[in-house]
Length: 168
Image 1 (cartoon, helix red, strand yellow):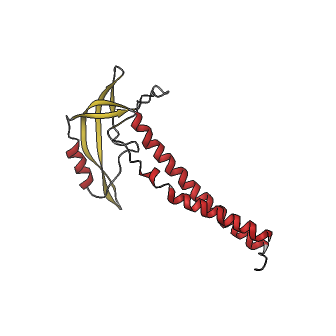
Image 2 (tube, one colour):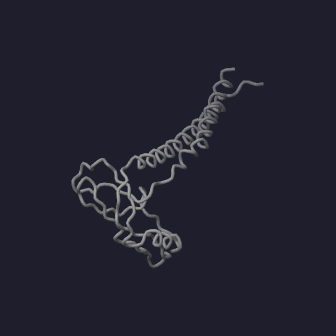
Image 3 (tube, rainbow, N blue to C red):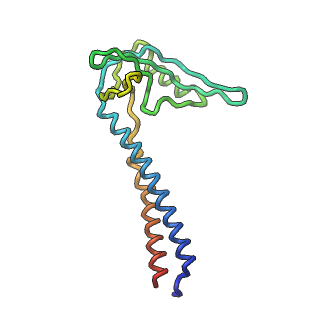
């Protein structure tokens, strides 16, 4: 085999570096999402009462209407009365149709006694309310982290191959 050119080695090393950081970036995002989903499972389960459950709508002149579930629930934590408005930690998503929203309306009707999960850490800003959710996010991101890790490992392999080829 001929000795690899310096320019070719630098090019391959750059591609390997790009793949490494691409994979590492996605691994970091998935790990962060998994960590956030895991953290809420440590929150305190608290009884709550659904006080609002309705369909919210947004639209504009040239944009199709979108819908989301708007909820409010009362709960008591450490002797304080609170109101929460978050279904999952990342909030309620907007949908093109009302099908998914209607399912939540049926699942969480007004005056339903249910449980919510309250973050036991009190916010440092007194104007902010304590975090509370009705449901946890999925931890699937943590189970998918192997896929972007393959890109990082492949990037390392390309970089090592480029350096070895340039040194021969």
